Length: 324
View 1: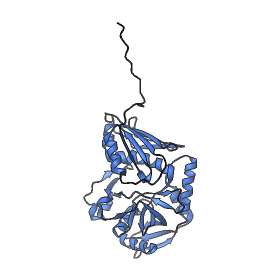
View 2: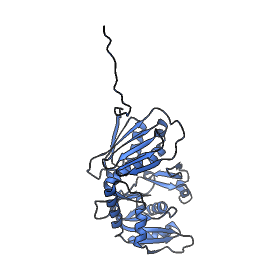
View 3: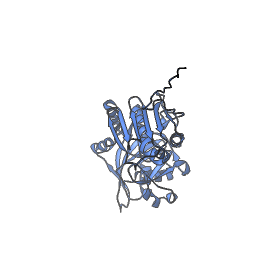
View 4: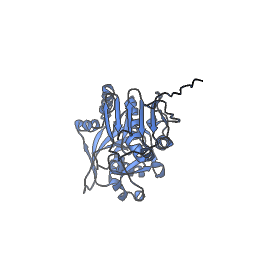
C-alpha cells in the first residue's frame, strides 16, 4: 500500500483566515462592512456606529480585522500614523496595526487579544481613524470644530486647545440647541448648501469639564490617543437634543478671556480663518486633498466671526442672538 501524502496550503498572510463576524453599519452615513474573527471587534463597532442611518448610496467600504489569540509581547508604543498617496497606516508594533487604501475604500488591521479587549484604545487608536479616513476621502472635508444648530442653522465653533469648543457646544445643547458634534464635523463635498455631518451620538470632554457640569462628576475618564484623560459620554443619557445633519450658517472662532463683562463679536481675517481650517490633516491622494481644500475655502462664504467671552452662559446668549 502506498501512503497518500498529506498536504496543506500555506497561508502565511492569513488570506484564508475565517472572518465570520460580519456587520454593516453607516458611520457618517456611509456603508462600512466590517469582517472579523472577534466578537470584541464586532461589539465595539456596533456600540460606536449602530445609530447612524444610511445617507449615501456609494459602494460599501470594507474593513477586515484579524485578532490573534495572544497578548502583546511587550508594552505598546503610541500609535504612529503615516501616509503616502492613497495609502495610510497606523502602527503600534508588529502585531497591532492597520492599513487603509483610501482610493479603493479597503482596509485591514491585525490586533492582539488584549488590544481588541480594550475598547477605548481600540476605537480611539484604530477603528475610528481607519474608518473615518476612508469615509472622509470619499465624501468629506473635515473641520476641527464643535457644532450646534438652532432651527436647522448650524454654527461651527472653532479654536485652539482650551478655547472651550466642546464645553460651549454642550452648554448650548443644555439651553435648547441641537448638538451636531463635540469635536469635529465633516463638510459634504458634493453639497452646494454647505451641509455638515457631525458625530452627535457621543461627546468627549476633557477631565476638567467635571467642575463645570455636575452631571459629569462621577463619569469615568479614559486616556485618549493623544495621552490626555477624556470623559466620553453617550448623548442618549443626557437631556439634550441632537442632529446628524445641518446647514452651516456661521463660523465662530472662540477667544476665552477672564474678566470680560459682556461677550462680543469681531471680524476674523479670511487668511487666518483659512489657515486654521487647512491645519487639519487631510486624507487621500493629491486630487482628493485638493477637493477637500476647496470645500474648506467655500465654507468661509459663511459669515466668519470671533467671539470673545468669559462664561458659557453669556457666550450661549450671544450665539443665540447672532443666529436668531
